[in-house]
Amino acid sequence: MDYSVDVNAGKAYATVSRDEQVLFNLRLFASLDTAEGFDESSSLDVDTSESGVVRVTARSSVWESRVTTTRFLPDRIEVQTTVTGQGRLTDVHLLGGRRTPRGFLPSGSRLRQVYSPNPDHPTRVVRDAVEPATISVCGEGGEPGIERWLFTPAPWCFAAAVSEEWIGFSLVAPVAEQNFTSYHYRPVTGGFSLQLDYEGHTAVDGTFTTPLLVVHLGGDSAEDVLVRHRELLDAAGAVPSRVAERPEWWSGTIFCGWGAQCALGVRTDQAPQPLATQANYDTFLETLAGHGIVPETVVIDDKWQASYATCRPDPARWTDLAGWIAKRHAAGQRVLLWWKAWDFEGAPPDACITDVGGEPVGLDAESPACVELIRDAVTYMLSADGLDADGFKIDFTARTPSGSSLRHSGNRWGAALLHEQLRLVYDTAKQVKPDALVVTHTPNPAFLDVTDMIRLNDVLHDHSAEPGYVARHMSYRAGVVRSVVPELGVDTDGWMMPSHAEWRDYLRIQDSLGVPALYYVDGTDTDRYDFRTEDFDAVKQTWNRYRARPTI
Image (cartoon, rainbow, N blue to C red; front, top):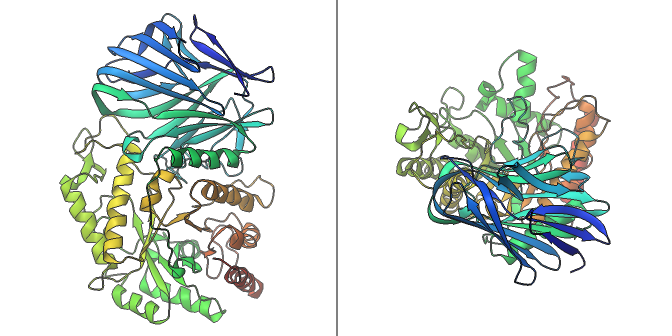
């Protein structure tokens, strides 16, 4: 090891240093709270008899036994806790916990900065170490204070800087064991701990072991930490396999009509969803073609369907969606349909997760009725006897239900339940149409088997930021994808641009980040800028550069 460890057995923490500089004082115990009560340690027995290993056995207030094992390896530190007993897990605290009579004790820290791979701010990528961060499958852009819905989930890894060194805090577990909704970095002045939210939906009757937490040292940058995170997952066999080949058409330029719907809406004082009509999409594509812009892939966005869960076209908006798609195919184009994860509109009650009053709050992918519903919807959308579409843009994965009082049919929760829902969509899609393209915003290696392309997602706004902030922030998002799931394509998105100027600036680099995606047809929505000849020329220049690349 090129770091030193000094164990304080009386207080159950280890001081980790390098070159006589303290990195942190890691607590060698945890707390696994339950719905029945907080997990408090009244005594801690520290065993250092095995070289490089510290085992701490606690007398717990809620568990028959709790043992935390910490292994100090040459380039990393591995921590895992096993409890025995009965209880429904709520909050699991790592590198910190409750010890009577002192209360909650975090790890000590010399961390200066923290990086989260989950975008939650329009401009900031690195934050001060005293500011919290969350990686989650839950978030909501329309709710104040919860701007963490763009990658759901991002990779389960925080990066932190001490001097010039970057350190990673990685969770290593297969998706079947990811029955939590959120992974939190919880700082305090001079310290921190980590937390997982199980929300009472994991019942322990016997033994339970936490996901492996790996503290890996010696990173050169935050992205380097993410690359190491993926390597750890691969070495542990925690990354699902996927078919390596990608059909060439998946790399085709994209037009998504959502931005055009929004631009039309602000100019006509209408909501954008009712503007997802056959007539409008004909106009969108005719306008682009009139300027020499012909996308290879067209995305029909929210709300083409009469009901989100059943996915049949709204006849008032689409008189012949199957025929429309056939015309696009005849023109050499592919069509993706926007699909809203979790939405129960049109679903039977027995296909849904419900609240304490019995009201539906989201689809329940472990319910037989939901399995039948999703398989029927996907088959209809993709089959030659249905709409014959070519794949999906899956959105709103951040609507993953959260709450200890919610009721559902199976044992999965949080990330594991989201993965199960996407698996139903993905596997059915591939059975119906093997080259179907499934686009999500789940850049997490555990989801590698349920997605083909990662969408960088919507642009957040900061009108006080320096010009060019959109391009910089989208580059950071693309860097997350490139670091942890390089096998997947990147849909570069392009909505909601804060201004025409920011849109043009981002357009200049889109082709270097992934597949260029055009969301606007004749102008932007925010500043209502009407496009001119030079704007259409700029789109063509970006697309031509992209198409000229050796590999796309």
